[in-house]
Length: 149
Image (cartoon, rainbow, N blue to C red; front, side, top):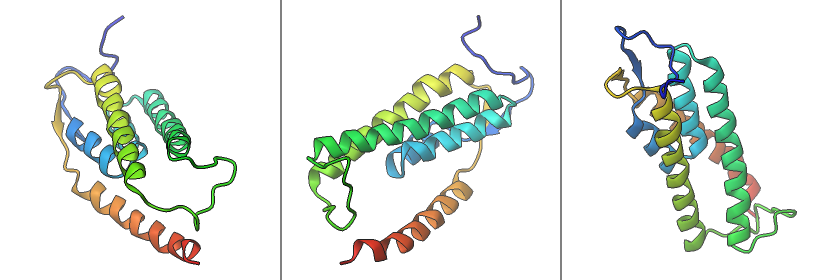
């Protein structure tokens, strides 16, 4: 079994999001967003099955991450109340550390497994950044009224 399980032809280089784009999106937004970028990479080379697996990993990771953060910050998982959730330093540090870990798993395990070094060209992450920022603003504007007393 080959260490690199891609279906990309040897002579053709696909334009994909780089490792740095995936890890930075994972850190600053969420490992779920990083998994979406990696899924798009895998679909671009024709490996839809691995793309869906990466997406499922991203969803599962974020769910487990939220449970871990709730437990570490003393929250009750059964009774999550947005109005009583207070931002604090511990929450920020735990979230950042778990996002770094999730991004590292995406690039060091999944990315390395499917993409050989120098077998791709880097795709601009600017359109993805604009889309993620727009979605973030939309979610904040929808959730902000729920948080206010």
